[in-house]
Amino acid sequence: MKFQTRLYLVFVLLIFCTTCLGLGLVYVVARRSLLEEMRSKVLTMAVTAARQMDVATLSELQSTRDTHSPQFRKLVSKLLEVQGANQRDDVYTLYVYTMRPTHEGREMEVVIDPIQNKTFTEFPEQLYPKGTKSGILQHLNEPWSPSHWVNEPWGHFIAGYAPVYDSQGKYVGTIGINLSAQSVSRELGQLQVSVGATMALTLIAGLIAAVFLSHFATHALSQISSCVQHIGEGDLKARVPVESEDEFGHLAIAINQMAKGLEEHERLKLGFIRYVSKPIMEKILSSDITFKGERRRITVLFSDIREFTSFSERIDPEEVVSVLNEYLEEMFKVIFAHNGTLDKIIGDGLMVEFGAPLDDPSQEKNAVLTAIEMQKALSALCDRWQAKGRPRLKMGIGIHSGLAVVGNIGTDQRMDYTAIGDTVNVAARLEAATKEHNVSILVSAATVEQVAGLFDFKKLGPIQLPGRGTPIEVFSLR
Image (cartoon, rainbow, N blue to C red; front, side, top):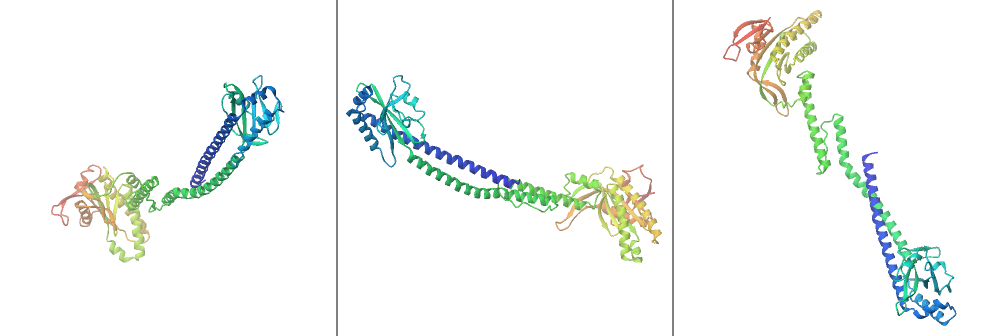
């Protein structure tokens, strides 16, 4: 299930529960308020009726039980009068009657029931709601009304009871009034309809709001998810267009920064994959190198194929490219195998650095080994080429160690990782000098000092390089 769907369901459930709780509380409070209002009315009516009773007559009837006497008819008329006086649209009195405890004091019996015209032992069940017996007996000395509606097959009502006292304050009997609750039921029914309609409208509005809220809450998440998916597919230029100040906005900023970092990482990788071997590339990517121009000691190697121009004149251009590519492929293998960094290809010539961009304590040794292996690789190539009728080629290599500024040089439109300084110029001049001294490899004293005893060098003495005022001590490699 999608997050948006789950969020939508949560919103709907929350709205539904909140609506039910709120409207339920409204209904309960309204029902309780109506009940209290009815109790107040019935108690007022019962107390008023109790005060209007002829106490002496009531007391006498309870003793004589004479239902045919004028006093009985008079008391019945009074009860009917009380009932008739309380017949309104909002108040309808079902029964008005008198009661008293039995001689055992465990039951209540009806003394006068003007509607049913039954008295004493013939107690109508309608006048005696279930659950009120113990309540009446416990409240003989005070007005009392059950705190609940009475629902019986013959009606829905609420009862109220008030004691009748004689002039000496002695208890004589109890006036009971059953007040119809039909009007209240109608009001509660209307309230239920209103609550139901309100709930339905609220839920409909809530469903619509939940759609917009879930869409709003997940829109930013969808954009973030889409951006991450594009990044995962290799589109490192993808960005999240979220500008909010909430958590989604902060997450978007973090993802955009991550994408920018990955883009720079990939650009760095693509930029250096042609310069160094894969192991060196992995080390570069895992390091914190900034590639800004910095001054450091490196060893520079320059190589160049001799008389390559005249060679190119004798064969087709397509074959020249094929020979050059085959030559460069072998040279790259040797350079990368000894931790060299390919700076640039200059026609058929190569510029290689050792000790940059990563430090290499064996940079001089690796440079010399690279020169030797390059000569061997060229010799093997020439053996194959000679079998095809091609002439053999020779290569000159110059090596020098010293300080140089190394880093990315250029502008945003074009930038290359390279080395600049006198060390580079000396290495280039040494490569050119191999022709004059008829040797394949020339190494400066600065490099030889670091690998003394490891290789068989021949000292050629100081030589004057073009563009330099001071001669430089050089060695050839046997």
